[in-house]
Length: 501
Image 1: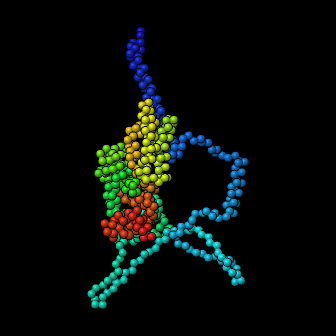
Image 2: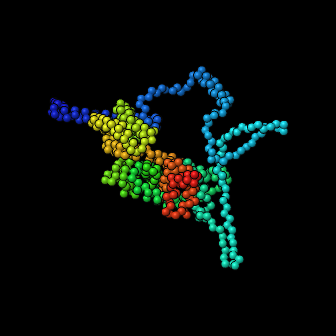
Image 3: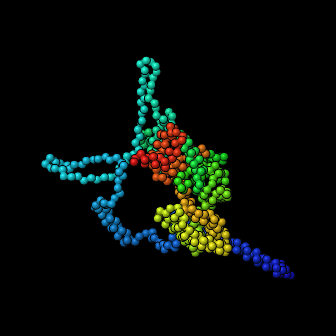
């Protein structure tokens, strides 16, 4: 009696073998993919976080415990260094103390009877010192005058205040907002600091002050939104923020901050949206015209397809994909990374030599264009023989489908090679999020977006955020609306410099 296998035809047997080989190939591909993912996550968890690629460094392992003799020798060396530090003279090249700070002079004379001695000179020693924040009460005393003819009473006019009938001054409000949104100090920690100074303020009161101060900035923020829409070159990115308003009981809503950075004049706009969908950037990008630089998120493709928009991709994101492929296919990943390094070397040269946009474009066409052509040709050939689900395959595919956008920065010397300036503007928000964890409502998240916008501009233009905010809170309600832009941080700095000349 023949077995079932013997009854099969040769064609059927070949088909079975083919199916088995295909299944084995798919299994091997899946195993390779999972191993590469595991290696990538291990590197993300335990490896270096910087993106700079340094080829194949020779690393040596470090011992966990030192030999007793070596430990004893190390102790003697540390003892000698401590004695040296105690006895060494002052270093002549120490940092110069700031000249704008007030000086408190303390005169020290030798002890004993100095009546038979003559002062022949003095030695001056300076040190930088500080005092904790000083709280004080500003008391307005308005005098009333009555006319002798009994025609009426006059009283001194009270200056405009940030919160009508409220007790906080502009300086206190500026300190609270700066501490929270620049130095990432949550309000409950600020309350503890007030308590150390024996100032008891309820949490709800501090939260109310913060809300009212941010509302005062709304007209200036609306002006910033209007000006941002008119920019001809924007970089865009987004980051999540948890919001307590949620349809799900016991869960926080996942909202998003969208940041729009204008590299040419250093302005930054944060905008909050409850969603990460394609409708979120519509208020800003709906009528945008010019250069739009983004990462590979699919939502941006909708706006990039506009005939009035030239889409720029980000080389930093392309580089990251190849960096993740080092454990999957080191030889090809290194080859791509080395060529990307050449592109960034050109950017450093242009920056170090302070080239004009026209000179930068010429340099890029001379040195960067040949590298881009070589890399593009290499990817085009290699991607044909690369499994798409491997990390090296994903890296090649990421660059391949965005090649026009990756090359578009060559059009103009004003354009950036990557989106890193926009990502840098997001960092304070990400650091603050780790401390205060969430926004209380969608409205609170949008108010926070306003202050993040202006503090990011302060950072880019090297403006003291506290001084700018205090000045703005003192003047925003009385300034003529035609001069509202004078309160932008960069314009405030320019005005300050002109007044000091």
